[in-house]
Image (cartoon, rainbow, N blue to C red; front, side, top):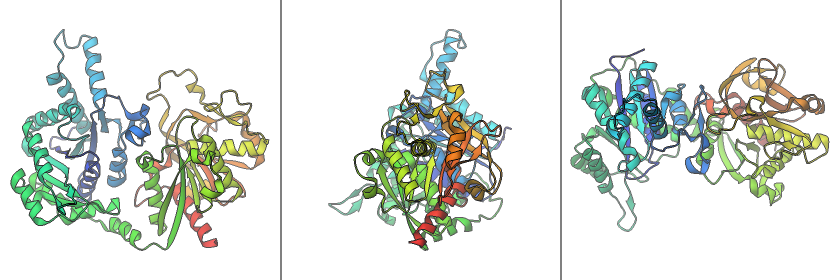
Length: 540
């Protein structure tokens, strides 16, 4: 449904990348939603990959999966968690998608033999996709974040598109927020605004002047610095917003609220709030951080722990559950390969709970299996996600069959006990990108199970990203040995959740529950896991 009064807010970044554009955009989206406006948000990523689905987590962090199966940038996780909305594939646009579409049209002759150029063909496609999300969503506010930093060659077509779009829809319908970093010079003990001035000059050189500057720093920012930015960048002093690094991510909306950011933006558009914002639930989250009743230590045993962003949704889902249970979270990041060289006792003995997240490939899987074995034998709460579910099944099969050759065909295609195997519809798949079981699928929960205790309902929908599944050939043997398959596809064919009898909490899900967790509404499985962890802490 097209909204003739759509307002566009564009977010750009200066000085360095990873400066907090995504969090700023998500927080402003939340503040607008609190004032009664409908919001949709889109990320423009300059890389030539069609999506991040085939990229190593070391390259780009976590791949965030949406309801419709789109594999997207991790910033979409921030958007969904902060604004509490469900996004679609229209919310993630890459240079790869744009060029693929334009080249496909050229090959089909859609351009009638014309010369294909960045302007107008690439920029027209970018503008079409931005307008399309506005039309499909019918949102009153369309927030668009440009990945990378102003001055990057690969970002230029996106910025040029935004400049053109401002001309087409009218300046009165657009607003530019520029987020920059203020470096601290230790020798002189001062913050420097000059890089911000240069990044704004770079932005202006392509015809864009920011309406607001969010100045990021690790130290408090003096008023004189803000005044200097206002003067040299020609931005109202009220629109130069200091944003000092905060100990809790979820403090950002409250910090922006303090500087009346939403009011300034609405005034620009000649709008008034439809309702009074209610941030009491958000304030409650921050209060829970300040006054925890418990302290819990979770061993996160993964393949990519050197880069914490590879597990950002897992980390945040743990935080949500801890906040809900008045617990302070400490994560012990353990590389699974280390457990193949060092005793589990030395690395896991201090953990109150063990979590094994998703991943691909054989590297480090024996260390994960060792972690699952330690959790089972020592009655330590265990939560397995996707690969972590498969690891739990493999470890239990090895124990039950007294044979360490039980495995997944992903790791050993000659295993005599392939308890994890390719999904039937994956056997003839050759392309890697976007071909897994992706997106939202229903799951039927069995009564009188840990999963049912967590969900309190018998039917849920969860997001998936995998090629392998529990091999039904071994289902009866595993059940007879003490494994409970508490979540299945509605037709009963696929096992989605497994748990162990006679264990305080040992549960694995083939899906990724972390993608649907929210700060004020933790995911039920994470919440139940942390409850079990706290119970263990109290019993000690």
